[in-house]
Amino acid sequence: MENSPSAPPHAPATEGRRGRVLVVDDDPTVAEVVVGYLHRAGYAVERAGDGPAALARFAAARPDLVVLDLMLPAMDGFEVCRRMRAHGPVPVIMLTARGDEEDRILGLETGADDYVTKPFSPRELVLRVESVLRRAGAGTPAAEEARPLSGAGLCLDPVARSASRDGAGLALTLREFDLLAFLLRHPGRAFGREELMREVWGWDFGDLSTVTVHIRRLRGKVEQDPARPRLIRTVWGVGYRLDLPGDGEAGETGETAGATGATGAPESPEAPEAPEAPEATRAIEASEAPEAPGTTDRTAGAPRA
Image 1 (cartoon, rainbow, N blue to C red):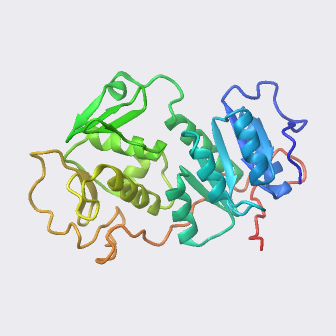
Image 2: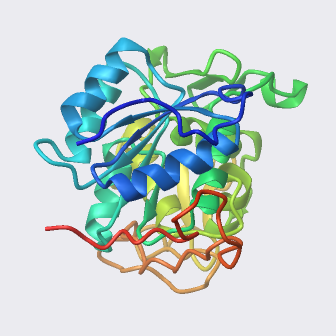
């Protein structure tokens, strides 16, 4: 399996100006396409074809972001992601041929910041990489976004990317931190999942269950009783709202009766945070041929045994 980090001959001289990306995929065709697009977008890219090789490269020089295939030989992407995240936060985008919702949800709950399902548009993947890195703190936050946030015992420092509740540190992923910071900036206001996806993830498209999973994970870290949330509330027919002491205490009889995103479909009464069926992600500029010879704009990516 090819694990060489060498750049393809068409890589621009300015490669690396936007950061370093580690691409982990045992399919050489998919890896070549992804690496080529990321190089042309200005990223320095290394490749690994299996979990052990990926962990070795990660330990040698930590990348700014990892594009990680789920179905790897010897060690699957879930385990690779867990081991990487055990050494500290690093943005991870899962790349998977599996269409099962449970696998996508598990990827997010393992700590991945995003996932893309094969077949996919490489240009869309590049946009996802840009979005995740932008949220990871590239550049100095604006004055309003840099100010410390607090409420209900929660304290967030957007510049230091640190969070605590009642003095105890919170281990938040990149998206969990951004989601909590956004809600703390707008206490008492209800947001639909589509709106949260635009404001926090920076996407105008995607699987809304991504928001649902992150809300559930965030509740597990900031609520005293995640089964009966008092801070991050479900608003029937709308989405979610952060209530600080003295705000929005009335009218939450639907707290365990179900939730809905901006699509208006209520979730299961027994499991209010269960994700709805995923929406198809739209390809970006799918009709435009890639620059790399011998490839197509949409990867083949058929599921492997």
